[in-house]
Image (cartoon, rainbow, N blue to C red; front, side, top):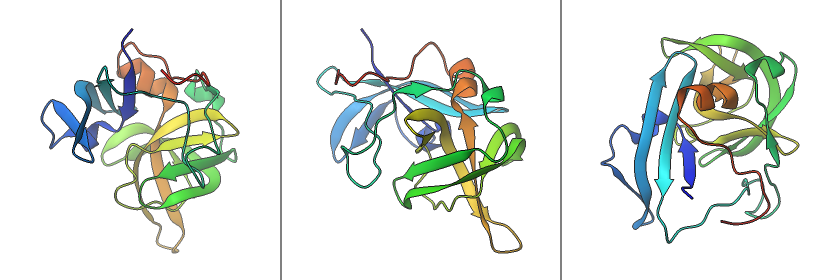
Length: 171
């Protein structure tokens, strides 16, 4: 059956339909949506590549996604949350807003987590529960960081027919 990697749609804007990582073909662009409520890009994984439920924390084998939030209403201000970003690494904080405007689009979530350019498409989760896909970040006028993300339920609703891989089986 088809397997997919989920990222932020804006990460795919300058790519052709074939996606590379480290000079190797990872897959092909399957779908992208970047508007209200979600910034989601879906890549169909090449047949000779594998996916897993590992999320980078301090190594590639110390954290896994074992479930996901099925409704954006499951997320509340004050909930604990962590970002695994390619540039900033692993950072945790709390949800500070739901249904916020990000880059002119409404319906995104926000947390007080530091993020950097290159983190887009990163995994938002807590205690093994997948919560979202990183979109943007910055610094408030008081110097505190903020980061915004698509809730995984919104990404699924606007990003096509796929289900997050939560099994410990590599496929």
